[in-house]
Amino acid sequence: MEAQKKGFTEPDPREDLNGMDVSRKLLILARESGYPLEMENIDLHSFLPEECLKATSVEDFYVKLQSYDNYFAAKRSAAQREGKVLRFIAQFENGKGCVSLQAVSAEHPFYHLSGSDNIVAITSNFYRENPLVIKGQGAGAEVTSGKVFGDIIRLVHSS
Image 1 (cartoon, rainbow, N blue to C red):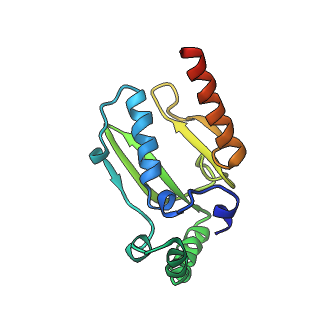
Image 2: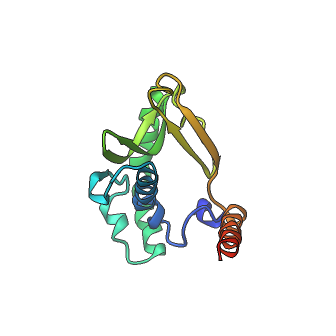
Image 3: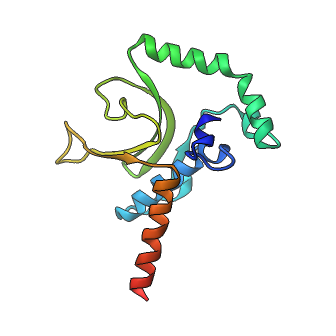
């Protein structure tokens, strides 16, 4: 609820938490990179229980989600015991996409994410051992309005 109040999520947080949003972003990045990826080429492993996804309203979603507090606390604790943190990660490799919850160690570029940060790590022949990392604020009213304003300016200049 805190992330929603800060404007980091869609009005219905299931839109972000079900994995479709990040799947669409992966699809766009792959296509812009020249790969003919389709949504059916992305394996989506939502970390939300089906009961939460089928909630009849946002309020009902939060009620159902609270009943899984112990489940998520156990996942987080298991990762912490290994010195890891949980991250919802989209990957593209060998023409296939995958979106899933993963436990990552401190050596992983995504380990130190906080708040609404977004990150992209590019591993290639040139960046095999040390990926090229692009990181920055990814949500919130200021960032979103800046993006919309930038789109409007580009449209005006292209007309």
